[in-house]
Structures are given as C-alpha cells and as structure tokens.
Image 1 (cartoon, one colour):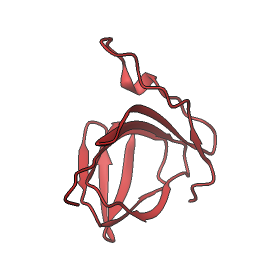
Image 2: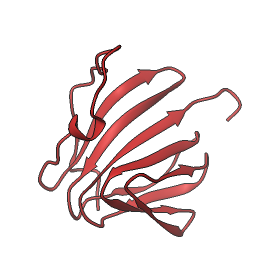
Image 3: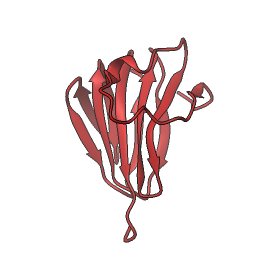
Length: 120
C-alpha cells in the first residue's frame, strides 16, 4: 500500500453546465490509484479516484475536513485507528487533523471533497 502507483490524470476540470456520469469519467488502471480533478479552487477541491484491487492510500493527516463518498464498490477507510467499511452510495466525513488511510480491499471508486477554511 503505497502512493508510488498513484496516477494523476489531466488536471482539467469537467465541462461546466453539462451533466456527467461521474462513475464513468474515471477508469481503473492495473496496480494503480487514479485521480481526476473535477474542481480545484483555493477554497477546496473535488476529485474522483479509482483504486485497483490491492491499492490504498498511506496514512496522512489533513488540516481540512474531507468528505469521501463511494460511488462504486466498497472501501475500508480508517480514521484515528477506527475502521469504517463504506459501501457504494455511502459517504463519510474525515475530520480535520485526524490520522486516516484507505486499506486495500478491492476495486472501488470514490469522490473526495475537501473544503478549506481559514479557521482550521
């Protein structure tokens, strides 16, 4: 479980004023975590991510709240050493300043929304 297999797709935002099927805008890549930015602003960003089987994210601490929403499959998200199994259609808020990581569990896709605020 490392970040060395992370691939960042082109960093262009999605076309505005057009409906998108979010689960289809990103594909799985063998042995990789793929990240596509939907919106990136100074106040926060929204990204869609795909995780191949056996891939996860290493432990980190973010200074901002993050909302992780599973849009395909299921993921084990560990927050402050407590494991949460999050299924397709569910979301979880990862509080600012909490240790967190994603355990390898199987293929899944998720949307990550980070809201940056001045008081954090």
